[in-house]
Image 1 (cartoon, helix red, strand yellow):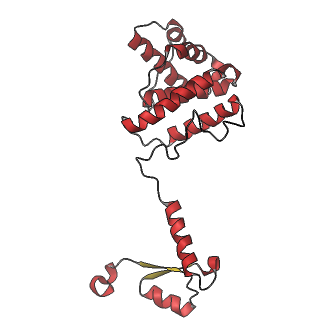
Image 2: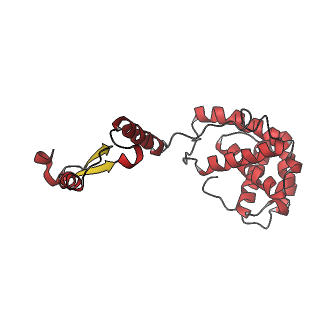
Image 3: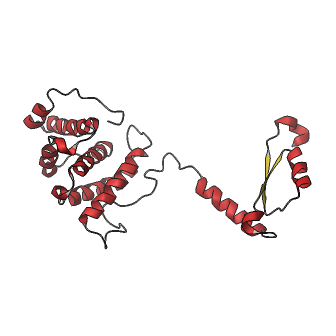
Length: 221
């Protein structure tokens, strides 16, 4: 490779429990060979252990594929590690954290792929009804978080807002105590207004509450 490519040859990485002397290291580096000596980790004469640790590290450090979403498939409706030991409020907190992480790691698809929607849709609907049963017990800010994350998932996964949940969304979107971020509130209001338009209903409460507000359209809407 060096004879044919000269200075354009790519660097070679030599990995293992090498225990090289300084002169040996300098010789290899002069030949464009980068030395990764794992002897301090595994000891001498442990080539297999050194190779195993190095390959394991590379596997763990591999970047996530952009189409692999959510990165860690974890049901928000059932099968949670807290399912058998924690109460509904603890499960709600866990669900909100999971939803927030999944929204932040969303690859930015204009339309979420159908096979991913099929799995996430049932999980989202089950979690929505489970959290709705303890909604009044949540702190006001957590109510706002729940509505915002729910609105984002409903929009992303093409899930209509069920009639039985619309009243809950309407009452909370008008409560100033639930909102720290006005943009999050507007996302929920837009979901309600769009649902009303699609169902040919009137949302007078939402309309009056946001009559003087300039609605902005975030990038993910």
